[in-house]
Every structure is written in C-alpha cells, then in structure tokens.
Image (cartoon, rainbow, N blue to C red; front, side):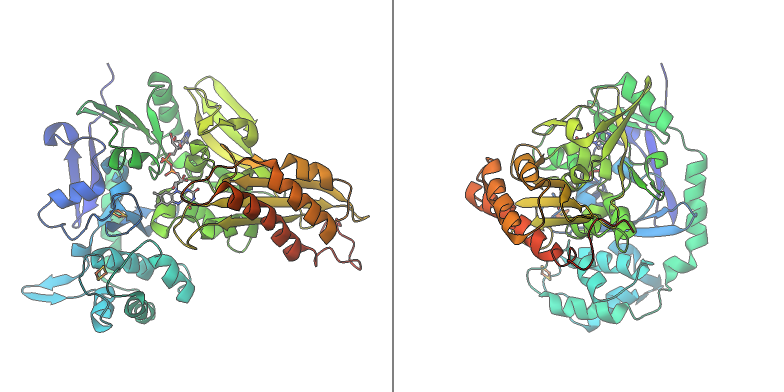
Length: 497
Ligand SMILES: Cc1cc2nc3c(=O)[nH]c(=O)nc-3n(C[C@H](O)[C@H](O)[C@H](O)COP(=O)(O)OP(=O)(O)OC[C@H]3O[C@@H](n4cnc5c(N)ncnc54)[C@H](O)[C@@H]3O)c2cc1C
Ligand code: FES
Ligand code: FES
C-alpha cells in the first residue's frame, strides 16, 4: 500500500509549522478558522457566519507566485480546509504589531484604524484589519474603488464604514514597507524549504480520506483510484456542506495546490483558463481587456471569496445561479476534461446536464475552459441583478452576444441566462426571431416579449417567477440601449477590426 505523509506544513509566526493529522487527532477538513482558534496566540480571528458572508474570520495567506515573489491574499478562514494552507504563510491579526520587550508598535494599518476611530465593539475589527492589510500589501493600484472592493466581504454593524474607509485612505498613502517586507526573503526561504520536500498528502483520520496532490499526474491518479472523492477547487461551495449542512465528507480530493491547473493563456483568437485559476486572478486579468467577463467578476462574491473560488469550481457546481456560466455559454466555451485514459472537449452547454449535474465522468477532472475571443465587431455584454449590489447571489444574470453583418442584419444572437431555469440556459426562441433582422428597438422589444415567455422560473426568497421573467426581458432592452449606438448607419456593423 502506498504511504504518503499525513501531515502538512506552513509558515506561522515566522517558523515552519507542521500539523500531523494522525498525531493531533484533527479531522482533515478542520477549517483554518477552527484550527487557529485552538492555538493560544491566534484567537483574534472570529467566527461570525461560518459561510463566507461576514469576514470576521479573515486572515491573509501569502504564497509564492510564478515569479517566486510573495502575494498576500485575504481569505475567509471559515471556508479553508487546513490542508489547503500547505506551503503558504498564514498571517493573523496577532502577527501585525511588533514587540520590543513591553513596547508594542502597531502596524500602519492598525495605527490608521486607531487614529480614525475605526472600531467600536471590535468583533469585526480583526477581519477588517486583515482585509486592509492585504490591500496595503497588494501590488494593484490603490484607490477609493480598491478600498471599497477590499471591504466588500467585511460586515461591520456598529462603527459604520466611514471611519474605516478613512483609515484605509490614510493607509494606502503610506509606503508599503513593514516588517513583512523586511523578512520577505526569509519567508520565501521557508516556503521553498517546504516545497522542496513536497510529496502528495494522504490523510486518513476521523473517518475521512483527504488526498492532496501537487501535480496533475498525481491528481489524475487519485481521481482514478478514489472516483467517489469530492473534488475541491477553492472550497467556497464545498466547505458549506460541512459548516452549514453539517455533512460528513468521507473522501476529498483537494486540487487547490495543482499549479498546472492555474493558468490563463491567450493568443490572437482564443482564451484558455485553467480550472484552478482563481476568480480574482481572472478579474484582474480581464479588467482592461474583456469587459464581458470583468463586469460579472466585479460583482462576484467578495474579494475573500474570489481569492479562493476557482473557475473550475464555478463550472463544477452547474448551479443555475453560477455567475460565470451564462458568460461561458454565450461565448460558446468548451470544457476540457482529463482522466488517466485521455481527454475530451465538451461544449459547456452539453457539460451541464441538469440541476447541479454535469457530464463529468467519475475518473475525470475539469482542466480548463476555452473559447474563441469575440471579434471587436461583436457586441457582448454581461449583467447581474441581485438584491444587493455587492456580495449577493444573482436573482437573474445574463450574457448576450450579437453579431451583425455588413448589411446590418443580425447574423448571430446568443442570449444566455442564469436564474431563470434549473440550469443556465439560452433564450433560443428570441435568438431565432432576431436572426436576419435588424437590431432595431422594435425588434428588440419583440424579442424581449419572447424572452418573458420562454422560461418558467421559480419563485424564491430572491425573486418571484414573474419578477425574474421581467428582469430577463428587460435586460435585453438594456442591452439594446447600450449597444444600438454602436450599430449606427454611418458605420456599417460587422466590419472586423
Ligand atoms: C459568500 C459567498 C458568495 C458567493 N458569491 C457567488 C457569486 O456571486 N456568484 C456565484 O456564481 N457563486 C458565488 N458563490 C459560490 C461559489 O463561490 C462559486 O460557485 C465558486 O466559483 C466555487 O468555486 P470553488 O473553487 O470554491 O468550488 P468548490 O467549492 O471547490 O467546488 C464546487 C464544485 O465544483 C467541483 N469542482 C471544483 N473544481 C473542479 C475540477 N477541477 N474538476 C471537477 N470538478 C471540480 C466540486 O467537486 C464541487 O462540486 C459564493 C459563495 C459564497 C460562500
Ligand atoms: S465567519 Fe463569516 S465569513 Fe467566515
Ligand atoms: S465594530 Fe462592532 S461590528 Fe464592527
């Protein structure tokens, strides 16, 4: 019988910290939050909701990017299974201030919070400080938008956000040089040391088998050997089975450290996104390049969620309200699946077979999704309607793609929706109606009426069936409003540029 180590290692308090699950008697799916709260010096991290909504449990994970530099990411520790932090640095609020004897020097982020009265009851404060710390360490542009973006996943009930935003605004002007920067080489050395000794991890404890490969080959081997294991990408869906539904997960295949699944490759005509790519990586990548993807990602969960959630996980859920799915359907995405015996490409629409069901075989994993990049002459836009602007699940989402030929007749019309049926779906009848017609208000209104009757959505807490039908048809009119100017008579549409 094969024997892989049942332990993981990560950097905590500037040292390599090892957790041997067999010796400690810990369940492999112990969350990072629960583990940290068991330690004497890391109780600042708090549990609020245990489902990724409040941010009280926010910690920062620093990991090496493909250039060997450290990247700091805020995550909800309530959704992170402990083995997922292997070969990362775990930073909690206790790590921010420095001590010299009895003298404590607050981190610039903490100092800014104190000076701006950014805390009252303080329950949310450690999480907020950690989100601001991740922003402070971020290499992305810092501005008012990135401040609110960094705080979207943190609820504060008593201070109100103004003083917190003021603290953040003050902090982003301070040069990012702190004791973490000074120790960066040392930390990188520790992480590399862990990586040098790396082999797959296999933990069999508490009636759970947890498999953690680091290469695609090992992932496929585990998948073949344990076809009934639940695959974990970023765990933002799967962790809730444990924290909210209280389910016992007997077998888990954790793909979060398989770097071969984490890529974005683009050429002149195609984009391929590895299944392990985080939604935040994709959000940053698409910002100035692909508004149809970026617009959806901007309002996807919170930064903590996007830092963990993967593209493969969103596809794998086959959720009727999985926000990326209408976009991938409108772009005619193809899912690449791989197993030990080969690989196959399958159109995303065929991959999603029913409510939360996919066509994946039990020896396969999702490797990537690819699609042809729309030509500049194609009109592509995506939309999300939810009760709240930020950190909310869609009532209805949509992505529309329209191609109009040089004679101004519609040549391609794909209208994909989420939230209106058991799976994400296309409005086939509305598309058929528009084919060969001009993109006029009259025709758009007619198509919108068809959309209103094309689906039988359900009523739930987010919206009534009638509201969903109305939203779906009104989104098409919004699309017309936003695109009809582009198809102006003096500029024949459909010219490829
Ligand atoms: C607070 C919160 C907010 C959220 N907001 C949104 C939102 O705005 N929009 C939205 O669409 N979703 C949202 N979600 C749901 C979730 O974040 C997304 O569905 C996310 O994309 C899941 O990705 P993951 O990597 O975390 O998936 P996981 O939880 O790891 O897995 C999800 C599913 O995909 C399968 N899977 C994962 N990777 C693979 C693979 N490589 N091969 C085969 N199967 C695989 C898993 O087995 C599982 O069935 C939210 C969740 C939370 C907790
Ligand atoms: S406890 Fe609320 S997000 Fe983790
Ligand atoms: S200070 Fe009380 S919840 Fe934020």
